[in-house]
Amino acid sequence: MIPRYSRPDMVAIWEPATKYRIWYEIEAHACDAMAKLGVIPQANADAVWKAKDVTFDVARIDEIEAVTKHDVIAFLTHLAEHIGSEDARFVHQGMTSSDVLDTTLNVQLTRAADLLLDGMDRVLAALKSRAMEHKDTVRIGRSHGIHAEPTTMGLTFARFYAEMDRGRRRLVAAREEIATGAISGAVGTFANIDPAVEEHVCAQMGLTPEPISTQVIPRDRHAMFFATLGVIASSIENIATEVRHMQRTEVLEAEEFFSKGQKGSSAMPHKRNPVLTENLTGLARLVRMSVVPALENVTLWHERDISHSSVERAIGPDTTVTLDFALHRLAGLIEKLVIYPQNMLDNMNKFRGLVMSQRVLLALTQAGTSREDAYRLVQRNAMKVWEEGKDFQTELLADPEVTAVLSEDEIREKFDLGYHTKHVDTIFARVFG
Image (cartoon, rainbow, N blue to C red; front, side, top):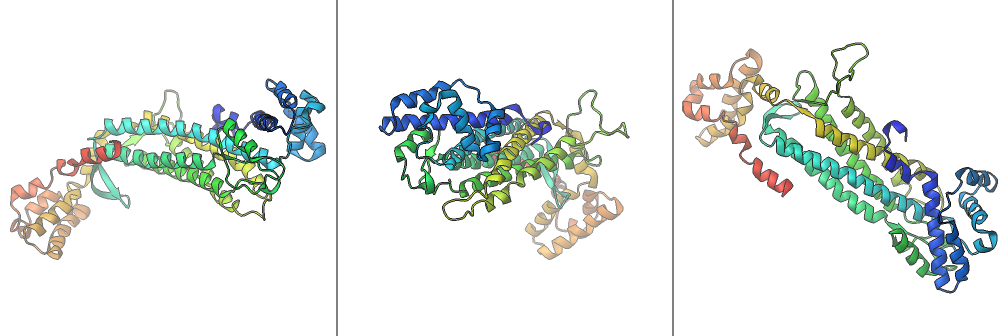
């Protein structure tokens, strides 16, 4: 997580001051619940809220932790400095460190998920807008990087919209999966704390109680969350890679917006490079980097160990901050992407009608020619386009074996672009409703 690839709102979720504020709220709400149960005096619970406007001193907590070698104890000691040791004596009653740490992490992840959903909404809006704008802008579809058959730029955007929409639905599910809390005490048995405390704290923090926490919240939840972020990152890279290909000089069907004063190369003044999409490709790798460690965190010893802790301290902020930045960079890229419809037509016509080969093949078979013979006739004329620069339609019209089966009008009709775009509206209705 570096400032270059960070947005302030997401970074703020992971600041130490935010973390300590959440710790404090968990402890204060737990005291409220215990007071209502008669476990601790109401006056002591009320006293904890005296610190509600306190900005906890991160440096002071670090100073205490340097001695205690325990972050939660260091925080509780600092809290007692604000509210007094007498009033603080019931704080953390019957709780264990993981109650605070795990519940806090899940609060942070749910808040992060909300920001990520906002970013995905911006991406989806941009993709939909560009899809509608270029619904009928014809371009060549490619398989293996080779010209295949005509499609439209709108369908390209619509395809990415559908993919990101699936990612959004997965993220909603992942947010629900991670939005649990645990205030169950040592080894998760509630021996020293009533389950009602957990219910109250979770309700106040926007979580649901973890059904069985064994002192820590099960890490399969976190694995699912980070795996979902990894899939979203791959979808970002999928879009970025398409733009990078379209921006190649030999293709130039679209390119990143190049602002006034922008420089493309320190050595070559003519360059306009796809730097944003290349950056997105790299950021996607960073996000996916968290997936395997999150999966490995699922396995813990008995009721609890902390082998997951160091991993999560890194991947929690790094992954959400990076993906948040990438989503907004992608949205801006799509919003300003420069499209070149004429270049799309020029590219499609580069091989002089060759992309209509399947229509001719099907017409021959429908007219009674065997598929093997039809394929031979079409490929024979297609190779002249590849190897000699001939015009495909002209060659077909000059081939007596072809004209013996298809009339001139039937051959020419097979080169109608509208044939390939007649179901665009149907596809759009499926994607956008």
